[in-house]
Image (cartoon, rainbow, N blue to C red):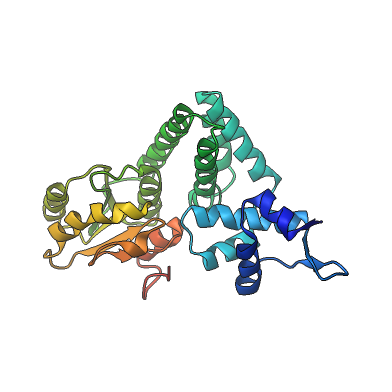
Length: 284
């Protein structure tokens, strides 16, 4: 058992945030000392770590709390995280590929992407910020992951009938991993997806939409500053009749109109575009 101060130091989540999560989301059931101080056991710490990883990956806190309470990050996931970081630090291409393949063999594509991959990439970003992993190591993991996702995207099949959904990012936005993961999940859900990739100029978006008569276009906002980069795309597509514009990512709520947020779960967003979740987009 550890105090809230120690729990904050171990997990990297500030004390006031821990109190808020306990009060708002019923994530943690803490014991108290005779003096009335909160104390946290290892299970509580794991749920905190899991929720923190999901929130940093862009999940809404309420959704992250539900997922963390259901799954947490058990010994297998923690071991995979650590091996991924070691492989990144050692620039071990084969080691990174092994971890990815092992994890994707453990469950469905959607479960692994939402429950492990995106939080693991957040941990990688923190390791880079703490200088535990070099820029080269982070880029290596991104490259290997992109290759793995590209295979999954192709395996999901192309040439489906039905209206087309375009997926891509505007100039200056290079966060492709979550976009390709979403495009893959959408294909697996039956959506006729065309993946454009990163650095797509506004005029190219418009030409692509008109060429394939797309019913929707999807992009992402992972950084606050990316919102302004999406404005020219919104302007280029604003007058295309019958076109829905969606965005994901941590700062999706900052997207310019007429873009609307898709929510923070890749699998849920894919299901929504496939018509399996009617109604308004999930709350941010």
